[in-house]
Image (cartoon, rainbow, N blue to C red; front, side, top):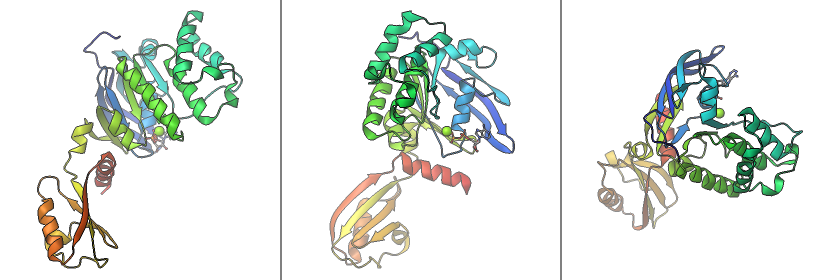
Length: 312
Ligand code: ADP
Ligand code: MG
């Protein structure tokens, strides 16, 4: 769909932004390539929405430069705006218009007239809003409004699509249909940038992830690379006796992260700790093991560890 180009989809260079005494962004540099499915993660207040608003040309950076497909977001605002569709975190809408009117007005900002109506209808169907075309925006549920905002962001067929917490407060069913839709956009060649609180979804969808904390990029890696950062895995054992396994000593005792009744969770280093040695140590305490499982660290574990480390 889109020509292969060496120009990054989004190029962010040393961006700083302050709000009074709050340092919302403190020297952020990132390059997002064409066709990537990129995740922007971080705790509340990390600066994600501020960065997205700067990319969209809605907020001005105090310092630094941002370009969308080579178009500077301030100096070439119109061109950059044409290349990007942003789904904002806040549900902003005009209550006096119907769904279709809202989309036509948005299309008008890009100089698109009625010739764009077939695409609007396609978007409405894809987002399961077909029967809400003539409904007033104020009469829609939160989830429906969210879908209209997504349609609005796509009305001019932008190459780059940025979604800021699109599934916050959305029910499971709608969330899944939204993900299916965003995946389709990605398959069709769009670059996708997503912020989300649902880390398992970022893990499932994103090729590469940046973690933002206190206005700084504290990690930038492929999703797989982040998962492999030596956070280790959890060994869960279930023993016959409800008595605590008190005999574990030294390096084995330090591995216990949770002990409740006859269940015991042990944290093992990915490379250096052996599951078999650990089980032997538990058996030597007189416990009979009746069940066990191991669980790899997921993105949530990595996220918690990285953002905690930075604070310490
Ligand atoms: P995130 O989207 O990661 O939750 P934000 O970008 O919304 O974070 O906010 C980053 C920081 O900047 C927060 O401390 C927030 O309170 C502050 N902030 C964001 N927008 C404004 C604004 N318009 N005025 C004042 N402070 C703001
Ligand atoms: Mg935000």
